[in-house]
Image (cartoon, rainbow, N blue to C red):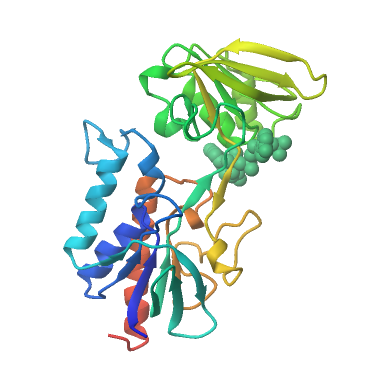
Length: 316
Ligand code: NAP
């Protein structure tokens, strides 16, 4: 079985940036970009215009940006495998990586498998229904789209993300409703106060969206009061899930330390995980920032950490 110096798992901004740096450092990295697990490129593949990635004053489409990341990683000699990693064995080095068709060993690993925004199975919210036609899981990515302008917008959730996204959406929507299943926000006090005081934000307590209706795009939602069971149909231009993210770590089967919500734990200020020789970058280890630019930055850090670690281990 082939042994490589470095295998990178994941193909978002973190993984491809790690690959660019590692390839330029002559580590001949292999990158598993996934296949059934989602499109190569990660979460940016499901957004339209990216306007906050530096270097693109006119904006860039998420898929175009990721195609360029990928091409740049390939240009310096990254071997990209279009398959999922099903499991890894971190019990001894070189670590074993089992892809859906390729098995390989690696002296060092970078985990950059990202996180998936949680969605709810609401009638009308699915793929082939209004998903990405008014229903999204990222207000910051999609909120500025014309379909949301001056329309009532609904954010589902009660945490800091829901509040932050609702406040962000007040720039675009005519009114923003936070639909929360309880009668109290989970968000931090300061954030909660900001939402509660905001003239354009209205709380729908003890509520859940039961159904999303529309034609080409979202037009109305049916909101259920989960205490009384009453239903109300409201005019709507968009529905935003903000109920948290799930880091993609299933294939690790508990071999790396995670925090309470499943994010990989790294030594602060570095990309070192709980296992020597295994580094983590991007959203899989970042419950806080979760931006393409921060993911790319930590991908660079992971490649530099891995390179230095390999050198210290005498693996040239
Ligand atoms: P979160 O704190 O886990 O909140 C998730 C929210 O979604 C909760 O209010 C929860 O309701 C609701 N929810 C979960 N599952 C649901 C379901 N099946 N149906 C309906 N509602 C559901 O997640 P988050 O808001 O994404 O925040 C994640 C972490 O990032 C937190 O530590 C947060 O403080 C941090 N963060 C910080 C900032 C900031 O400081 N600017 C911004 C964003 C995020 P319940 O309350 O009833 O459980």
